[in-house]
Image (cartoon, rainbow, N blue to C red; front, top):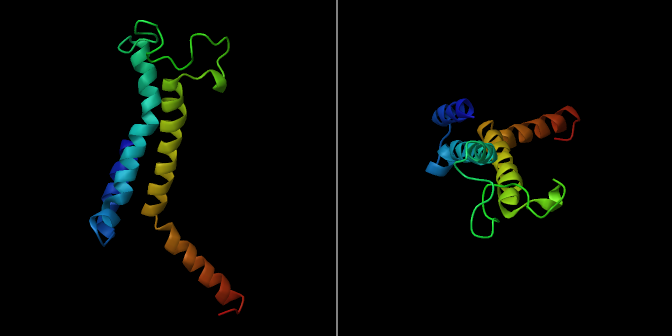
Length: 125
């Protein structure tokens, strides 16, 4: 993830326009890296007991991915932490990574060029 963020940041020198247009793909990629790594980091913190699985007076809050009162480890048994880290952070991270990578590759302009070439080859332009 660090290498990809550096590569996309290096590509900012060929982009022009406002600060967001120039550095937007880099920002999205860096944020995506943190979001994608959030659940893995939660697992590590839980394993080394920096953030115990169960904590608090009722034993509900902690790094536990699943609710304590649920017999199976399925999507229906995810705790609040499980939903936030496993689903929200991971999927949002991958969505941002795809958007940032496609923005860096200038995919919209390339698709427009393909469309124009297709029409030219078919005699529609």
